[in-house]
Image 1: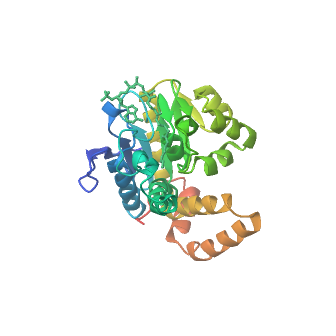
Image 2: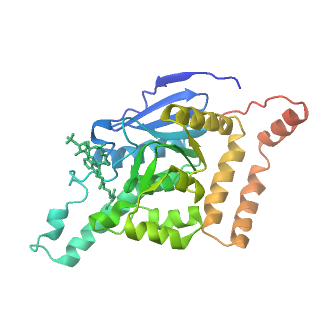
Image 3: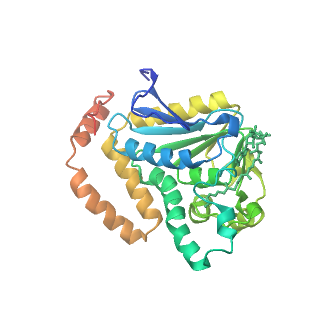
Length: 288
Ligand SMILES: CC/C=C\C=C\CC(=O)SCCNC(=O)CCNC(=O)[C@H](O)C(C)(C)COP(=O)(O)OP(=O)(O)OC[C@H]1O[C@@H](n2cnc3c(N)ncnc32)[C@H](O)[C@@H]1OP(=O)(O)O
């Protein structure tokens, strides 16, 4: 496959906690980049990941995303030292009425949820490339991705019960559907038991394991590159339809894709793809 290396960092994605680059044609790599704090999710992160994926959603030079992380581990989850978004001390203080504190918390949690919902709403497929530890909020995040790959040293924990919380950023909603085993999902969420790469693959949480981080990133970029070589109209329609269908009946999903394709079948990409297929050539699709 032809590889145009566009590895330079992109000036339009200038963040403190994320490093964004374009390592392959139409592929964007978003790297969690606070390694000294084990990529713990602080207030800058919650804002930046929201901004980043909102922009990628409408970036015509992006057709697939790899979500990786710099440093020793993938992520330690919620930054337990940052009380900007969630101030546990203030919440426990008896000075303010409980229901008023609850009303204040609601939009805060909704905003944090949106930080990962944007990954699912982004129509470009997102491949999570997980090495070493993926803790708490990390499971929320990668559960919102389309595909998960990991390295053989990876381990995961739905850690929230250990800090006295019910996970509230998507794990409890998405994880059981990903693994298709409600009993095991509950076991892992009730106990915070660590599960390692082999079990993650066996239960369907990740689809491939690579020997180390380097080969993991290479494998994830290769996959993203293949996805990016296909019609963006077809790929993005496929993601939108699969996300919709997960949460609806078969009949509703079919109705949705009829409505989608009654417009999208008019795409020039259909003819280009068919012709290229017949002529055994590689199609070139214009930007979307
Ligand atoms: C409304 C609620 C929204 C979201 C909720 C999400 C829930 C969660 O995410 S629950 C999970 C919370 N996270 C944890 O409990 C993990 C705590 N960290 C660890 O267990 C370990 O750090 C480790 C992940 C296993 C990694 O170990 P190691 O590689 O040995 O690193 P350390 O020496 O422990 O840490 C290095 C450095 O990073 C800081 N750090 C690590 N984790 C966090 C964290 N979660 N929050 C803030 N800071 C963290 C650690 O303090 C060290 O900092 P120094 O300045 O070097 O001391």
